[in-house]
Length: 189
Image 1: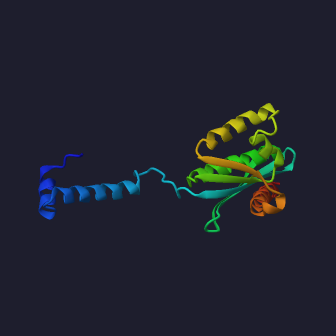
Image 2: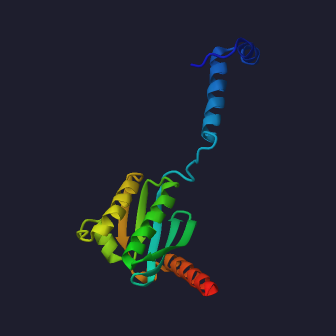
């Protein structure tokens, strides 16, 4: 236990004559302060539960201008926790799909789910991540390694293939990012 300065100990004794009451007060006070977190340290946004992550990556041309989109959903509250879309430069469709998943995993990590179900409309990526297909392209290895490192942050992680029609929100974020990229290129010319 922490030793308090004598002046503070005397004040606490006048307020709480019983040692048991003083100890309980101090324990509650310390607990409350610890729950606030360490100043400057980013705290988790939520803890536990099952969350659903929808990701999509796409490129206009293959390779071509590429973008990623992610939507993180709390199914119990039927609430979108986070949406994210961004252009990633020039990439193939498959690289964009993997990069979208990486972006989504980084976002989901802050919410500390007990189980994260990742929904992707790329059957190739899902089957590679689930070990059904071998990863043949050497350029995918660093991406797969990054995903495996991120995977360690989740007690349970699932990769599920869904048809494109069930991934509309993430697809819209990809197209919005690509459209913004196209507008930016037109302004430059």
